[in-house]
Image 1 (cartoon, rainbow over the protein chains, first blue to last red):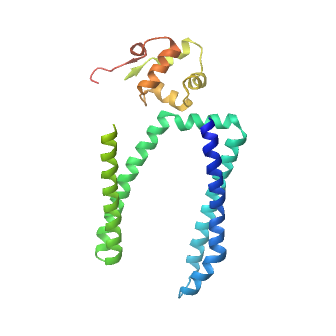
Image 2 (cartoon, each protein chain N blue to C red; image 1 turned 135 degrees about the vertical axis):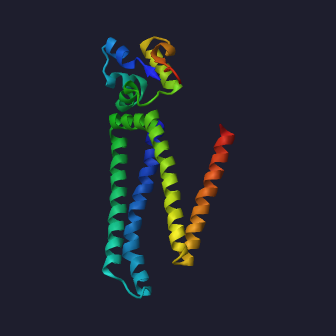
Length: 147
Length: 66
């Protein structure tokens, strides 16, 4: 419990700082980038604002949860039980395993398609795919040695 | 894997919430174990044996071809 409170305090500080970053980006850096871009269409602006609102919303939501953990011990205990619950850990592991396979499949499909269109995107996706495969092999090797 | 968790819990007049609190898991985990959707780990099975004051093999049993 003490560990949860301690880590939550650190997370809250980091997230509060992180919530300022998108605002700084929008206020100071975006005008600089806009000057360099030749043409800005309305959909680019819209997508940027959607991403901004999504990130800010997610950070604020996380901060509310952290405040609740720090102020309400009953809620903190519930969170602790949920984090240690073996079924939820099992579900998370299964989800990540399937997600990894899906990502690999999607990137591989994109690799084949972009191979006919653009060499730069093709090599970027190839690098991403190889990175996923190599990092997965290293992680597997690590856990095989560990257990 | 078949288990007698539901029967044992009801015999002791415990709710799923009570058992979950004693074992330090969520109520959903107890529901899944009782329905046979999820098999408890060895640690959780041993905790259950302590709560019910029984042996693990009396609560959990292997099915025919497992």
